[in-house]
Image 1 (cartoon, helix red, strand yellow):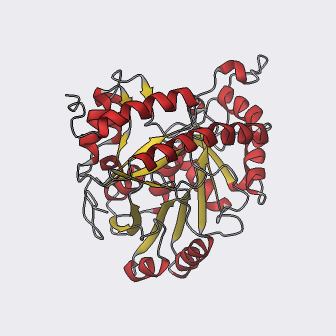
Image 2 (tube, helix red, strand yellow; image 1 turned 90 degrees about the vertical axis):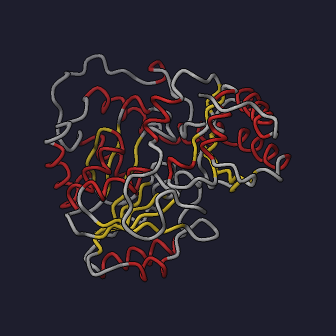
Length: 370
């Protein structure tokens, strides 16, 4: 794969901004959304609204009940292992801000979630970016070879956004061991893991998990995320949180409790939404084998589609936008050779979107949206 900002080494934020693509360039210009990476959002009427709730400030760590429910997802630890944040993004920021100092080394991977590539340099750290291996997983030996004496943090997604692939359990064990040996940490962004009971963070002080309700639960508007890890680390992040959002909305936290009490119901709905859309995407990719290669996702609501035409991903995604279809270009993830395609939609929406992409993939397809 061709990294947008180079291979291993210090990376400047030279890739295409995902915020610009999402909130500026594509806003209001499509009617078929195959670009966003979460399941369709739920209406408030699907949740239990606690009308007698007192709307006070809440707490910096999150309510004890919500932290208990989150810890239960991991099958180990207690509320002291959890800090609730304003979405998973705040959890990532707080962890980087607490752990990383100028001159530290952070190892990240491409293609990957932009903040994991961007945040370290903004804190004065040296970012070593490694490409995923041929099977789109992490080569722990390559990470060990790239690790310097100043290694402070290894940051990755599992399942990965945008490749949809899980990091193997053996690789995670080896990375956790490397982090412990170097007095460093392993950060695993598990936003797309519907089952957290086998998280690498369980029982390991040098591994921290980040997740939330935005992607697989379809509740990004609640802005409920969290970190799960060693109590002293998540407590330090809660103290730093006082300088940012102070506390989450107590209403959103109460709604989150009602969601996690129905975790299995939401998990079933997630799998029900993903299965038919994935079959449609698999059939579509097979028909266009000369133009694209589908990377089989592992329990994600999206797939990574590699281009075989030589056209940069951003150019193709702009042409798809002209046809009214939103995709996410790989340039926002540090790679220009593929795009992210979300399929956790109703089958009619996916079918219509893929039909429009049929015309986009033709040599005489529509020009790019200006």
